Length: 97
Image 1: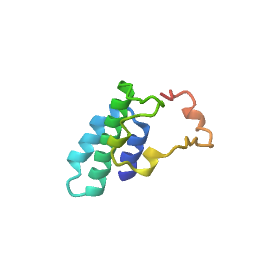
Image 2: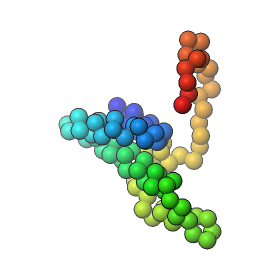
Image 3: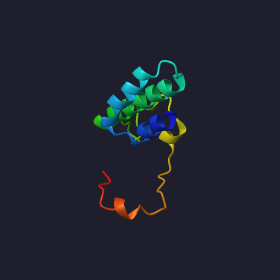
Image 4: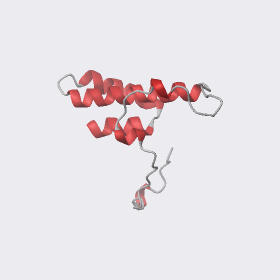
């Protein structure tokens, strides 16, 4: 479940926020899950705020970097990984978005 929270944060889909909030609420005895989900929510909200506004300086750098929340390593990775394994034939018709 901890890895799921990291993955949802890295994907960054706004529709994941209620799921992450529910995981925080349901995980009072497993702080590693709740804290990871809180970090994912903070990261997603920060990314959304930066995408919604053009906070750049004259060099084109984002001026909100100082406000960046703590993130898990998979959320801040500069690499875009793609699974090299092809999907199962029964899954090829499923949408990817």
